[in-house]
Length: 420
Image (cartoon, rainbow, N blue to C red; front, side, top):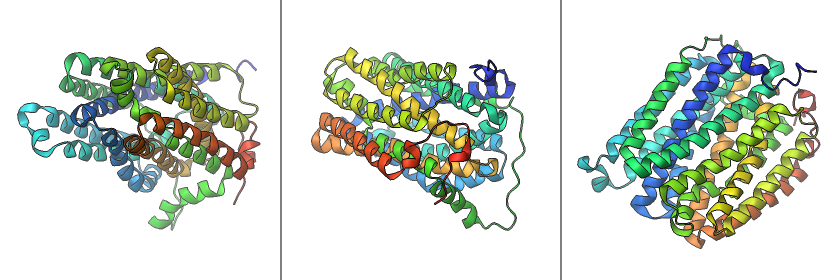
């Protein structure tokens, strides 16, 4: 029993420790760039719709290339794919740095359009990174440690997500946008250096005679046939799509709470603080016994907290709500991540993860566009409160449409799979 509940078992695997360190620094870089671009865009436009368009600019190329990215992750060396598309992200960051140099006058001449173009490149990069990262992670640990690895992967991601916005907000506030982008470049280069020490793992053999179309569609068909995976992904997508309050944090920080760039950094970090605490608890507690009901109640709580956030006019109460928001969201992250690892064969893992990335992009980036659009039309408070109400309604719908998810017990066995 002590081995079964060893919270640190997966950390004894050398390659997984290196992988987590890589994830930590890339997460810092991605989160820093996200807050820098958002703050820079709002400073240039003072328009919440411009923030929403950032999400749209990233989501559209991400979704358009995701299925092919999953195919690539199941056919080619996953470690090399990660290095290649991290380098593409670095090129985008360099472009943002050049755009931000006032003496070049790019923004004065072309406005914010070049920023959107770079964000689109970042969307392509992240589309290829996600399935390869998830597929590589599964190859680094034995199957019995999948839940443990998913929990620690979430933990490290959220530590980086705490650190990234805080560093990004502080550096932007005190040293300006150019120094902030230089720091992003530093963390990205550091992450690539760490990944080179992870051993290469062979790619699982592909089915002979499969056409490209069959390979591109197979991941989507696999998810559609698995009611547990489909229900979990759909719940996350629609809940976050409607409850995308994080996109509007620059608006709340500037116009409602009036706390500036440093306050915005703290607000962006707050959800990850809650998620981090939850991840540590999940790592140390026994496995979920009622995973489905736990997931549904966590998302209901997420919606309620989002509603309260929309009405808050106190900075510190807002911080508390954002911490709770992250804590509840992390339950969904751990459960969904574990289910994808456990219920997907290794030769399909890249393509299944790519489908999940489409759901994530639809929720995060398109949710950001939805939040920005509704905030521009009706104001930020109505946008956030309405989204929170929508999240609660989505839970009720998902619980009715997919009873298999509602009745899900443990996470470690694929025996509950149901074919359509």
